[in-house]
Length: 116
Length: 116
Image (cartoon, rainbow over all chains, first blue to last red; front, side):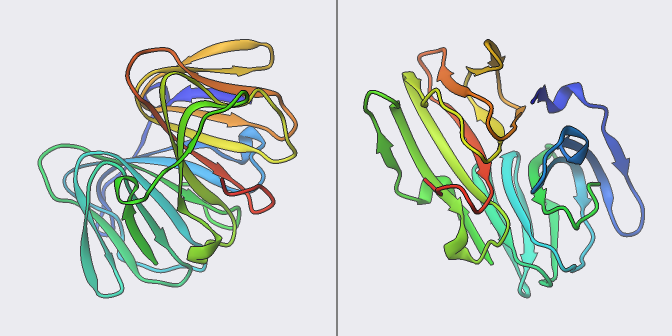
């Protein structure tokens, strides 16, 4: 079993051409004995974004705080606290922050995906 | 793909001897084509609790709002926004609200579990 809070886990920052102003953490993963899916949390600063890409695993995302948008199937959709997003495998997608506040969401992936 | 907000989904209320003052929703499930895990959201009112039970599937939980506790391995542990909990298969567990505000968390389960 594991009980933690994302604030207790040191984030890994990501800031390059593909991904800007993002801090990621694995909250629950294979190291914890989780067999079927991995829970990560991402914080995104102002003007931050994730890569625009696709891959052969799905995402299940829940927005915890802040406001942003997801690009999926050629459109941008607004996101706010309580939003839930299912990105199926092999669908191009991207997340971005749309305010000056931190945009925080959990994103779950199956075991064939990289944890972070 | 699916983009929703839990506030857009009608909750199913649960209130009996085993589970008190709980409203549940499936945010992402098999009906949406999600192959590997199901995302549910639970709101728990004052004095609310989930069943004290165990089963052969795991939980991955993320606390969105409010304060509560989880019973696991013979102890109660405090939970607050940003808490993440991994309940392995076959471990007895229970969640309860500890304040007068609504306690809100997402709880993910694999496909062999009931969705709600």
